[in-house]
Image 1 (cartoon, one colour):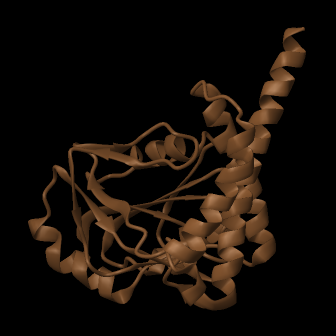
Image 2: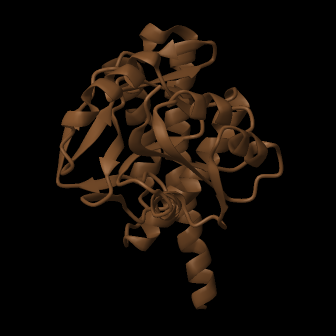
Image 3: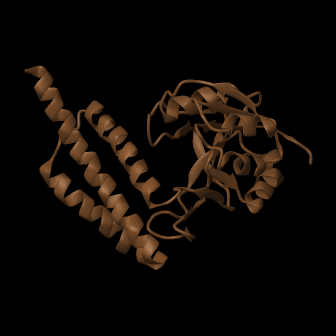
Length: 255
């Protein structure tokens, strides 16, 4: 297969269950960069076995870590994937066919399809879940956000075929992830000067559930759709609870 002047860039930590699938999905990439933040499993060995140049870097937060990884690429065109993502065969073909005509000033949004609780989730706000994963680093770059990071780019275009995402290992992993992300989100709210609101603590989780399960038709994904909607609501509840906790600790420290 002819290689494209493109770097596949992935950040990792203990991703031995996912990394091979991710790297294998883009065999056309002339360069593979993996930035690892201290894996204790076989992630690094598996990545190197698949031809990746592996760099070890302490965790900086999602945006800064991905930005650092892009800086290690040898090509300006970058395909930035999470380790639990992989190109569908159709998407791999689409990128190869369109590559010569890509606009270097545009970032390319890709519809992401996630697998959870035994099925592909197609409702509840989970699909198409466009993600900007393909860009030219001379005109685009990851921001500095610790969570919900995004690529800053002049304009955006869309690809048609899906990026595949194995989002959680199960319900327990979903709960753990919601706990971790809600802590980061609460910290960002505090840094932005947002204040705790009892009304938001009470009503925002309910509105999130109604949005995901009814308005975005999560009920069409069966029981997994219900579990996902409840999990989304719980994450919002945690976010505002933790903001209250942050403010409480700040008042205590200020005494």
